[in-house]
Image (cartoon, rainbow, N blue to C red; front, side, top):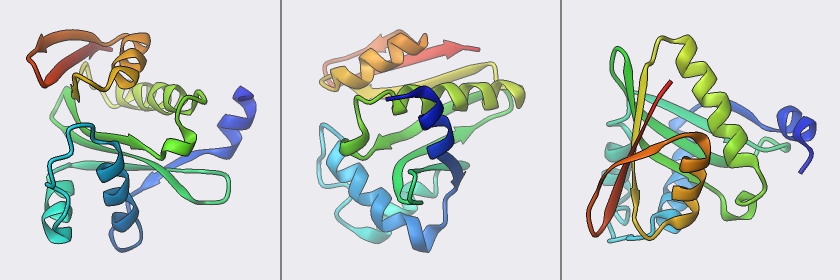
Length: 150
């Protein structure tokens, strides 16, 4: 996909709970590899989303929500609690662009370290994070913890 087209067609915006949460929850259900039913109860899902201190929604060309990142921000570090994208937009370079723009914004805010956790079987996500510069810092039979200094 053309990089200029991507930059002009997709944008970040804050989460609008009433408008975005139903779709974000559907994205979580579809994209979490080891889905265990933890998003079946809508109110519990919203409570889980609200643990995040910052919410970024990615909108496509028609204003449609296609991705979401939920962050837990400390003074100089960020933990990415959720990072999901509509499967129709995966493997098109959009996720890389999404994260590169996020990293630039976080660096401007004085963030020094970014950490995330990903299901070990989610090899596409792990590959993306490695390509972006994340390093594995811990791994067990279910999860990989990755970190990047910016």
